[in-house]
Image (cartoon, rainbow, N blue to C red; front, side, top):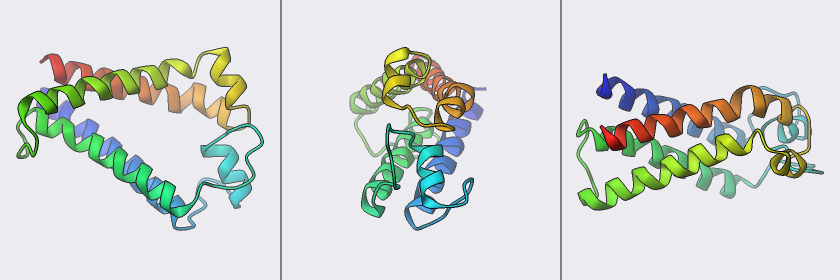
Length: 143
């Protein structure tokens, strides 16, 4: 069960990282143009364009790296980090994803990320996905 969870976290985060790369290199799905894409997937108040290719690539690399830690934690792939650093990374990712997911349901975040359809998608999909990923990291950390 834990091995399946580790691979699931890895696969989901790899897909999310791949989407970020796709957007960084000009992909528009699920939108029709850059403005609607920025309002759909970033949602910052007054956003007029997607972040730069470089910023998006860094975000994609960080998301992918986060996903790799899950199978490392379960020794499914070789750990490239000392055990203490891997556990610390898992703890930090647990906190980050749980906090990001929880923020989706706060007035503070809604005021900061004020563009639609991001707000609706965030409460419906992005926030709950972050909560699920955070819970997955927590289960793997304490397994």
